[in-house]
Amino acid sequence: MTVAMDASWRNWLQGNLARGCSVESVVESMVRGGFDKDVASAAVRAVLAGEAPDSSSYEYDTCPVSPDRIIHAHDREIYSVLRVGRPQLILFGNVLSAEECDQVIELSEGKLQRSTIVDPETGHAETIRNRSSEGTYFTLSENPLIDRLDRRISALMNWPLENGEGLQILRYGVGGEYRPHFDYFPPDQPGHAAHLVRGGQRTATLLVYLNDVERGGETVFPEADISISPRKGNAVYFRYFNNFGQLDPVTKHAGAPVLAGEKWIMTKWMRRYPYSG
Image (cartoon, rainbow, N blue to C red):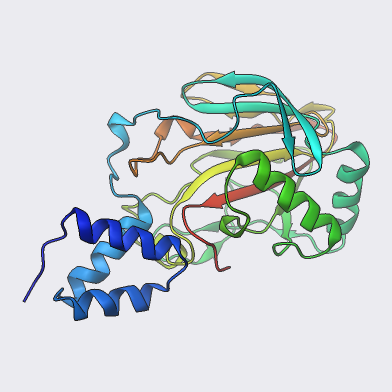
């Protein structure tokens, strides 16, 4: 017997994934309900990746971030400096203090490694010429400072703490860049399947600038003709997954080459469901 994926089953599937149920347990329940195992597995993967992989008609729905000019985010007042509607992008000021920026850099310096990307075909981490940086990660709430920042960022992005990936820290030297890319996992690339089962699709990014870059290093959104210069303590938020399960291709972005000095950034990626890194 094969059961059609009607609205009630889709709502059930989304609800159980949102509660943190494992992919395996969801598939088993669907099989007991009459689904073919391959059909159930494919349905779960589709929901995790985004139900509408064709992003050509992306709809801009209500952004979860507060529309207020000043947002009280956990322990800090953060200022909305600039808002863009398409793509959904916000430039924030006062996200981290200068002292906090310096502390994050100090904690990261001793464990930097060459940055990698997820190979779209295999899902393995690989180093490529398109991304010339060094980086490291902190697990969620790893120490008191990181816990405070994770909670602040969760409140600012208005997204559950447990849905966030660990903070990523990157350092770019002179000439360092990251060529145009998406932060979400394109559903048509098979290598991303293993990453999607750990929390579903990425929904939004907050990129925090940890230092003032002497020259270069802008964050560029070429499809929207937007360029943001790094400023210590500021951050740019952008959202690319809406409530209809669509992905916004206009959020393709790049880190322009650093022309003088160095560039330090901290990135938070939020997932659709609780993240198990």
